[in-house]
Image (cartoon, rainbow, N blue to C red; front, top):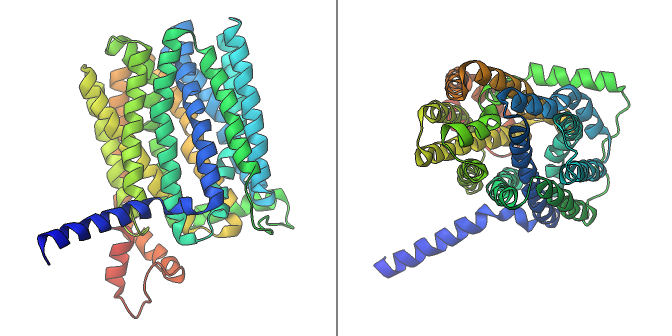
Length: 447
């Protein structure tokens, strides 16, 4: 082949690869959701940064930063299993519309109190707790609803990756906008913009055309279904092991974000713009990670990425605790964002691929518990440790815990591969047993 022909072939391959990375957007319902949720999430990340800065401005306390994080997430931990049962019983779109309306009301209440200068730490804690209760139903509902928006199951992994990219583009844009708005006025306008942004996702949900018969009716009691979901999660090793590492990282690794105002203000000598840059760097790393997942053509090999990404997050946190340079800290936050997203999306994709459909809502409620539910304890622990030993030593300890967890998970990869292999064969992801030796197949599942 001539040099010109080879170059043209590479260009076509690159174009096809780029198109393949966006294939889930061919589905109309997911396209609507992607647009509406993308707008809403920008407002959500604005509120997250504005809330942290508001608490820090009012109190200057690392302990209270952790307390607000705890209050906003502990209801999710307590209510998520029950919410998962409801998600399996009810129309998931209707559940999401209700949660978005309630979240919009919560944001407007926060905006009104802040703009009128009546806001205190007590109102912040109670409104954060209300949002946590809403999230207990919203998060497993959204996770389980992704399958209904995708007509071809082979596009599920791509949809999860694109959803992750959307979250982290918002993580990049939202804090940057919030930092600018806070510098020009105050935090209340961030909350107001967040409230308005919920209209976009509500409209997108209302405009969807879903196939009939997507609601599963269950004759058993809610208690029986709750027990059934727990037995399934605890008894199926791949899901149990993935969720355990996810819970460890959510408890010890992810809560570093509640300490970011301290790093921005005291450690790096900046202000709200510095906080926005740090959180934006996390978003950039996460977007890069999501894009790398979107261009993947198969779920095979994701298992190995889980311990690698968790270990990378831990190492970056240790170095971040040692850094006193803004540019180095931004680079390390980028690595943190990459590791966080890679572990989260890889875990989500594998679980969504292998879970039984009639238990999807309940399993995703435990995923929510591991993702968000462990974070309140992590936030409280991070705030308490930072109060006692300082923020830098706290994130270094957190990073070490993430590395230990990743090493433990790596020892369980052979077991995960052996149990997931038959499911992948049934789904057509792997060739038949006669066509490929077991050792080669098992290795490809996790590596």
